[in-house]
Image (cartoon, rainbow, N blue to C red):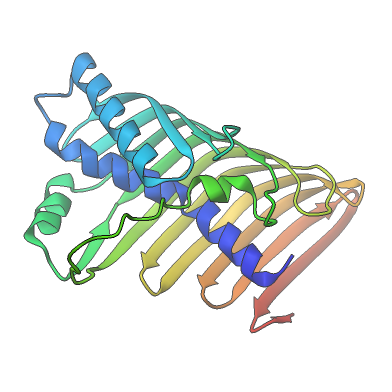
Length: 261
């Protein structure tokens, strides 16, 4: 696949957790304390779900919010559908921790440059279905593509907003699907830790270590420890140490400026 497609798909897939966490934290602030009840959490989940529907081309539904506080928001049973209505992602439980009051105060203050820090995001278990779209990208990337903004009569200056998540923890993720011309692949990722920095100029994603089991690669299972680093725009590099079938091997791959090492 062309490098631009790979980069575009990777950026969108790996920022899904950060985007959902950001909105969970943002909408939680007005409901802290007096709405941390069963009824209040149901209303919050409905409002948040509609906001995500209005934002993305796909559909994001939150089954329930189990906790809303000034420091933490916990959501369960998150389901994502692509623009054609197919379920492409299920998340059992997502926890986002941040100083909600400070974030919203600075947003409302209208700072020209704003850094939103989400201290910690925890993803317990997720299942993803990779369905190739007509453009070659997985449709899960289409699901998280923002809807076009309606034209505005006034031109307001754009704010420089950065989102920094220093700790992203993933318990387990199971994915199944295929890309252009590939057989059906299955992969299971466990115990992954990542960081995410997103700015108007690009994104930096670092997954320092993860446990990977992949099936469907050359007729043998690949099992071992991997890492992945993405600079978009920029280089993509990663490593894998483990086994392909019964053969032990290690590899380091780097793609930069259309060159593969």
